[in-house]
Length: 386
Image 1: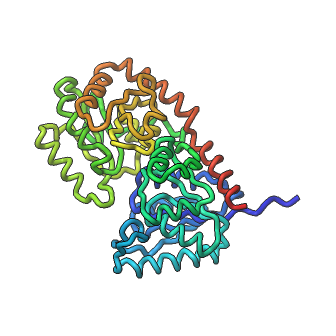
Image 2: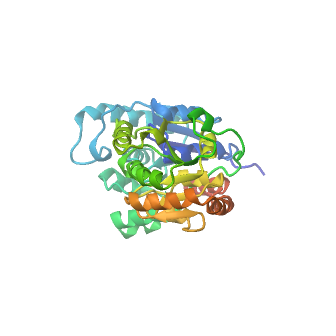
């Protein structure tokens, strides 16, 4: 009996930078078995996302001619930016051409508003089934509603994101399936770190955060907390990785100026985008996720692989991966004072850090292995393509 031919999947992602959603996509694409799937990815031309996709072997990358200007609310709201229409038409034409020439069986779209608008039109025109993958809180645009209504399957990265969509769009979103993001649990735990490069003393307690820089990610709360931490645990250093998120250009400069005003600039190192994240996590003693509403918490998951305890906000999906007192400490969002208290507690207690870190490393391997996520998503894509 002949084996079934590979399913042809079009992944549509319109992010430019490499945040959590794109990092998860890259991980999935590296692991999807090529004997079962033939993968084409349509993405915005230029930027780190396209560069990262092109480094994945065994897939085809088709850049889309998005302009800097786009239609409000994903291109399908009442107020339309006329200057964006030529770009939208060119993108749709490229997408339809790709679906037809590659004989695509199923479309997988991220939840970025422009991607959802394009995916809805593409699925409608091509009559291909649509799968939507949710990695962010609900944006109730017309394009989002149409795409979600047309989707044969909707996947969310956490129970928190599913609940957010139910609150936003109603009971019809109860059909969302939760598939927690996974991480590579086989990463090399031992190896070089960044302490010498960053001129951090070997006996310092290093607290780190990795995320695109944006107000809702909570870096300003960590900068504020640093003042209290350094008064009570003066051997602490802070390392923040990441670059400005789309739409908030100059935010790093704002954070650096704030650190200077608070008198903590010499102990807070902004290291920008890093390709060597394994070395980054080895540098840390504690990882922080201070987001106001984190969809899940990829940084926390990755740090847990390296046995690092997490100080996270009790918001969004973080409580689904971090149990207070087991894998780390949870604090309310937007409370620099409580964030500082939790960091100080761990900075002063090495035994507690090591105990929480051991539990984190054990449980992340049992519950968030990327191989399991890929298998489940693969089965879902195959079912949608039938």
